[in-house]
Amino acid sequence: MSKIEIANKANIVILGAGSIGCYLGGCLLSIGANVTLIGRARLKDQIANGGLTLTDWRGRNTKLKPADVNFTESAEVMARADYILVCVKSGDTQEAASLIAQYENSDPLKDNPVVISFQNGVRNGRVLSECLPNYTVMKGMVPFNVLGQGDGHFHCGTEGDLCIGDKSGQAKDLVGLLEMANLPVKVFKDLSSVQWGKLLMNLNNAVNALSGRPLLEQLNDSAYRKVMAVVLKEALATMKAAGIEPAKTGKVIPKLMPYIMSLPNFLFEKVAAATLKIDPQARSSMYEDLALNRKTEVDYLNGEIVALGEAHHVSTPANTAILKLIKAAESANDGSPMLSAAALQHAIAVN
Ligand SMILES: NC(=O)C1=CN([C@@H]2O[C@H](COP(=O)(O)OP(=O)(O)OC[C@H]3O[C@@H](n4cnc5c(N)ncnc54)[C@H](OP(=O)(O)O)[C@@H]3O)[C@@H](O)[C@H]2O)C=CC1
Ligand SMILES: CC(C)(CO)C(=O)C(=O)O
Image (cartoon, rainbow, N blue to C red; front, side):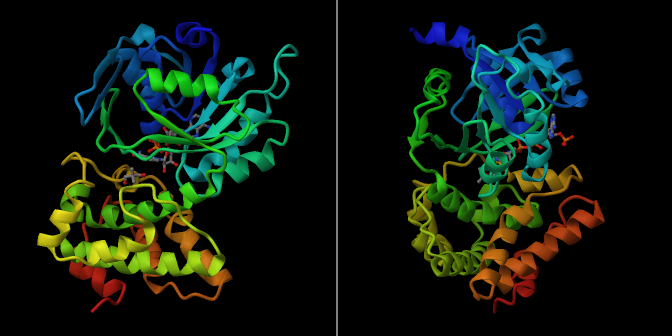
C-alpha cells in the first residue's frame, strides 16, 4: 500500500487539540491524512476564522484553510478511529481515558483503535493502559517545543525526533504518515527509559516558567543553570536509587547534565553550541500554563522526583522547593512570578 493510500485509510483522532495536538494533527493534515482534532470551542473558533498555521524553527510555514481542518468538540469521532493520539495535559489523562472507553468496540468490523500518549511525564501510558485494558496503548515522546501564538498559529521552536514505544509494529502506518509529514519518528520496543530521560529535560520546565524568560535566555544564564544543576543532581540520585536508567534524549548523556549546567558561560557556549538549537522565543509548556492561568504538570515532573525520592529515601529539597514555588504561582493566578536566578538559588538553598 502506498503512503497516500495509507493516508486515506488510517483514521487518526487527536484527543486534546492544544499546542502539541494541533501541531501533530496539522502536520498530518497538510499531507492529506485523515485527521480529526477534538478540542475546545475557543480553538475551534480561531480555526473557523483563520484556519491553522504551523511554523517551525527551520522555516516550515504551513497554512491550512478552515475547511481543511476537521475540528470538533464532540468525542463521537473516536468510534471510527484507527489511532487516537492523546495530547491532553497529564492531569486530564484519566478523563481522556474514560472518554475513549465510551467508544470501546464501536465498530464490530474493527479492533479498538491504537491509543498513543504524546505527553510528558512517566505515568500517562500506565493510566491509559489501566483504564483501557482492551486497547493497545503506546507511550510516545515529543522532544520539541510548540507554543500557541494565538489565532490558530502554532510554532515549533526546538528540534528533535518523535519517539514511540511500539513492540508489536501496530504504529507502522502512523509512523509512515508522521515521517511523510516531516516529523521523523524513532521507534523503540519499550519507551520507559526514554520517558525518564525526557523527564530530566522537563525538570527545566518549572525553572523556565518561574523565570518568565525565553528558554534560550534562561539557559544561557549560568545562575539559572546552577539551579538546574542541583535539581538534576537530585533527580539522578533518585533514579539511581530506584534502579532507573534514563536514556539520552538530547545531545548530552544524563549523568553529565548537572556538570554541563554548572559550566561557566564561555565553556557552556562551546559545549552547548551544537545542542542548543532553540528558537529565541521558545518557552516551556509550563510557562504557557502559568501565563494562561492553567494548572501545570509540575506534579508529574518535579513531583515525580519528590515521590521517587520519598519511596527510596533520597532527599529532594530543591525539587520540593521548586514544586512549592510553582504551586504558589498557580494559586496566585498571575502568570509567571518572573523570579530572578538569585531568588531561585535562595529558595533551593544553593550558595
Ligand atoms: N507544548 C509543548 O511544547 C510540549 C508539550 N508536551 C506535552 O504534551 C502534552 C500536551 O501539552 P500541550 O499541547 O502543551 O497542552 P495544551 O494545554 O496546549 O493542549 C491540551 C488541550 O487539550 C484540551 N483538552 C483537555 N481535555 C480535553 C478533552 N477531554 N476533550 C477535548 N479537549 C481537551 C485542553 O483544553 P483545556 O485547557 O480547556 O483543558 C487543551 O486545549 C503535555 O503532556 C505536555 O507536557 C511535550 C513536549 C512539548
Ligand atoms: C520541549 C520541552 C522540553 C521544552 O521545554 C517540553 O517538553 C515542554 O515545554 O514541555
